[in-house]
Image (cartoon, one colour):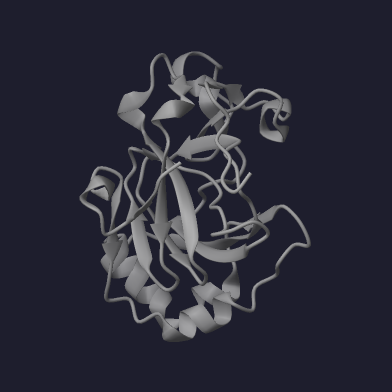
Length: 208
């Protein structure tokens, strides 16, 4: 699979690099967040990140003053198991180079996606990147076999918490958390946990 830098014009439908948040201290704290021995871990809200001066800039400049949560996704990953989207943009800030596996909501057909449409984009360490609400994404990948990563995730507060109880019809079948619509590959832990199985096509795995 081709790995495309986010400076490439092909990234434009998915998101943009975002600047002006003053991230030097932020990245230092992010590098001290917990790292699992294997797999990935996700924390939607991490006070040590939310108390930094950059958090105010992310709130006011990045989200127009909306209340935000700043957490992280850390670990080791090289393959696609799921994709998710939100009703808002997400700002991701990696402390290490990462590869994001992305698709577009407009590419869904009856809430299903051919994995052949997924593209891989390289985000350099220290670069804040905004993923638009219409961009399907999930856990990042490291830049080589066994390479770990730490990445901050900024979203409206409450995102990814417990899902509201709604009838599982139409798009609501994808709802797996608050402001969190998920499409999983068959046989994955997310599918076994109740995620909508909507990914089909060739397996996507980097550095296999």
